[in-house]
Amino acid sequence: LFCTKQRGGEWAKKKLMQLDLNEKILLDLGSGIGFFLRNIYEELPEECLYIAVDRDLNKLLLLKDVIERRNVKRNMLFICADFLNIPIQNNSVDIVIDQSGTSNYSFEHEEFLLCELNSLFKHNCYLLSSFILFNKFSINSQIAPRLRENFTSAKVTKEIENLQFQSIDESTSNYLIRGGRYEDFFVQGEEIYTYSFFGKRWG
Image (cartoon, rainbow, N blue to C red; front, side):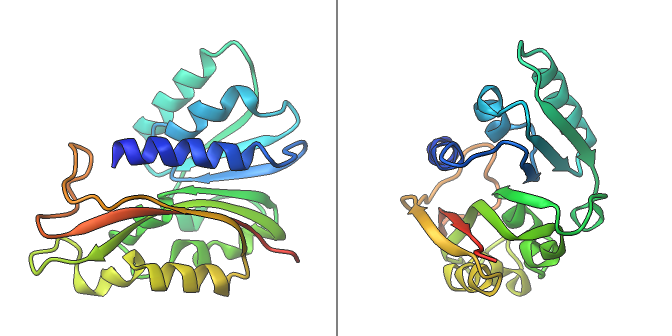
């Protein structure tokens, strides 16, 4: 999945760089140690604000340290908070970057994260997202039955549609049947893949 993530990150970067980011607010849900941000940081315009949100303070501090050593300076805001308590204004986000943030949230919650945060997004915002999906669950799955729906293609595409995002481009990875050291959430007999979505609401 790590290699898949890298490829997905390149795909997402290409999509993001097609947009005019000047004077835009970008919200990165679950920035972690910044795989995505590190890849695009130098190419962000000076006149945009990038908000990196994660509930893990140590990861954010590490990311902040890495970014501050770069030669170029960009407008960054690092927020350590639970997703439902992000202290930003409603209708303020121009571009939502969700590189597995919703999927990671779904390991513990039945609610679909993007729906929970919809009030923060502008009516004409863009969504650049990547979801961890299961092609099949094992009888020994680590994902509790009540949480499985958010890891299915049908549910994810339905929720994106309900949020009124229209697809500009999509990408689906190959199936993975064995995880690396970062992927201890699926067991033998399960197949996972990533589904990437780039779209816009037309307001």
